[in-house]
Amino acid sequence: MCHVRPPRAIRLARFSSAHGYSTVTFRAKRLIGAAIPGKTGAARPAQEHGAGRGKPKHMRSDVIVLGAGIVGVATALNLQQRGRSVVLVDKGDPGRGTSYGNAGMIQREAVTPYAFPQDFSTILSYALNNRRDAHYHLSALPKLAPALFRYWRNGRPEAVARTIAANIPLFEHCLSEHAALAQAAGVSAALRKDGWIKVFRTAAAQDAALKIFEEARRYGVESISLDKAALADKEPHLRDGLIGGLHFEAPYTLANPLALTLAYEALFEARGGKFLRGDARKLNLGSDGRWSVTTASGAVDAADVVLAMGPWSDEIYRPLGYRMPLFVKRGYHLHFTSQGNAVLNRPVLDADGGFMLVPMSQGVRLTTGVEFALRDAPPTPVQMTRCEPWARTLYPLGEAREKQPWMGCRPCLPDMLPVIGPAPRHKGLWFAFGHAHHGLTLAGSTGRLIAEMITGETPYTDPTPYRADRF
Ligand SMILES: Cc1cc2nc3c(=O)[nH]c(=O)nc-3n(C[C@H](O)[C@H](O)[C@H](O)COP(=O)(O)OP(=O)(O)OC[C@H]3O[C@@H](n4cnc5c(N)ncnc54)[C@H](O)[C@@H]3O)c2cc1C
Image (cartoon, rainbow, N blue to C red; front, side, top):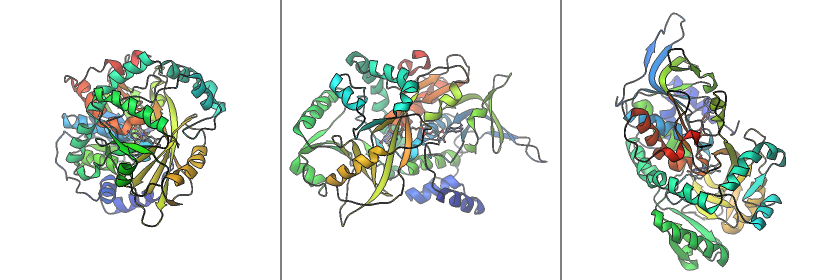
């Protein structure tokens, strides 16, 4: 498992079902405190057959979406909005995978990917394995090497330029697609509009960032350079020692990423969608060409199935004969109280420190950089240990709120682009995974694109760069 599931969820589930309440709707209302719309009946619901007399239920729908992370839920909503009956299947509760613990930023500015460094001295410093922003398991390298080698090759300037070009349409739509979904779900207020700030401790780091983001203006990315005084004005409780910052005003940020997934999921159910708990590895292709999955509530079949299982997606495509080089960059978070009356107004990235601080409903969330390791290897939160003292020099953190950091796995592909589109050799199978550092950001853009492809609409952008057979 890639994450720690709070036991409170189980108590809540029991309470909710005992009171005839959809667990998800209940949790979304509680976490966001907003009005989730009631049943509006926008799309055809899935059809149930064969229930009763001890016979297991059988359900027919147009589409099954595997994985109820933010990408799967946004995909389900987009399909539903286009009149498709949809069943969403997850092995656990919605939003409890990687989507649970991210930094909560819908990053309009993140068009330039996190590329593998190309210069020898930087690679050497990563190889020493004592940095704060990155860590690796030596024992994992033999398995990771083929994907990492391709990741390194895609760090060449011409390859990065290709990734940026492919990223532009997805990122251009990220804010509007989330705004539309959040409005429909009645949680527009959950999208905070104060942006986020990258802070600098050295002039060299500031100059390098200014250069990158000056160029990024070409892709519609706006940023405002802050001197020391302007930074202090925006974030008065950051400690001394910073020389300035770069403020990205456009991105939305969240106080609780789980709550957004649950609010979207609640809208999906309110519109007649079904969430079923089941193991997607039981996916089967029938002789009639329909896909089926056995869930805790019976079997469900559909003409189309969307694989949106983030870092677990290989568990479905590998047995079907696809060889995509999916790997994970693991990341950790831990919440802290603030000392005295200190307040953090928006997320702050300390690139030199290799971490981010984000004001969340649970406290100030410290998120770490990347860990190259096998997805299911036990957590090794050494970066948290390295970053925490630095974070305390940035902001007056109080006590940790949890004993152990949460760990999640960013699902990555070596060319730093997701896979969005049809499976080349299986009719009705669709892929929507591999969003790496930006799955929250791109959930709406992805959900719309894949739904447009499935329903035969003209896609809002050419999906060729995201096709599965590019590897
Ligand atoms: C520390 C950290 C910070 C981040 N910060 C940001 C950020 O600020 N902004 C941003 O855009 N992105 C951020 N990300 C990345 C982002 O969180 C991910 O890209 C995104 O959550 C991926 O979503 P997903 O829906 O594809 O996968 P997941 O959320 O992992 O969902 C996959 C789902 O599949 C289900 N599943 C797995 N196996 C099975 C099975 N056998 N049967 C049925 N269901 C199954 C899981 O239970 C899970 O619910 C961050 C990531 C980390 C780790």
